[in-house]
Image (cartoon, rainbow, N blue to C red; front, side, top):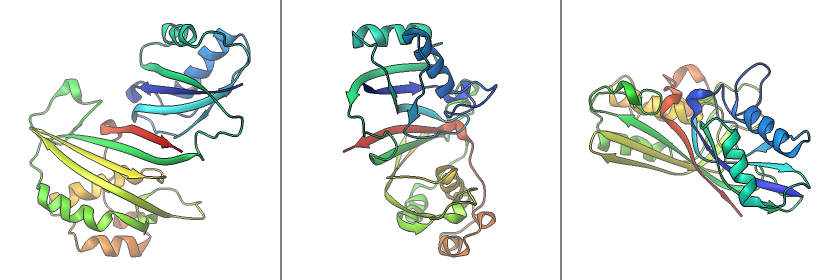
Length: 242
């Protein structure tokens, strides 16, 4: 039987989602606990390979077993054994051909920015920019970034066959001293969102202009894009399936 688990986690406690030798990762921790409870070797497949320091409100993984009798008790046992930085939200049965990665219709990421006073308590969870942001300028830049483009300049990946991605929506919300950027697409390249946010910050500071965006796309050169913003403010917010 194949199962789909929904997780949330504090990415500041892990070296990313994907399992690595001798590193604390989300996938590694979940597989270890699943294997312990079910008394068999469990391997999982994740919907998104979030990087070190990136958080998730909603991440999905699949695994196979024939030993689950009571789903509610199973979730309770998982959360008792996980260290509190990972939380299992739900579990359901899925078809054998379901893929948590390839059956995704849309992903939404959220980036959080503090434009008020520096807050050391938030530093692992909200980017401490602590400067004013010109929202109208940001919105103009966002309009040029949305849509289907070659995002090769926005990633460190050098071995992809296809760098075309289609950003369906970018929404910016200001709430007192916080800025929230919501970005939706079916898929993203590595560091793509952090490079987009970094470019927006550079535009806000006058280091880049809105007119530079067309050149950055055409150059297909990571060096033209500017800074890669810190991982601390990035969250895998929602994943939509068929």
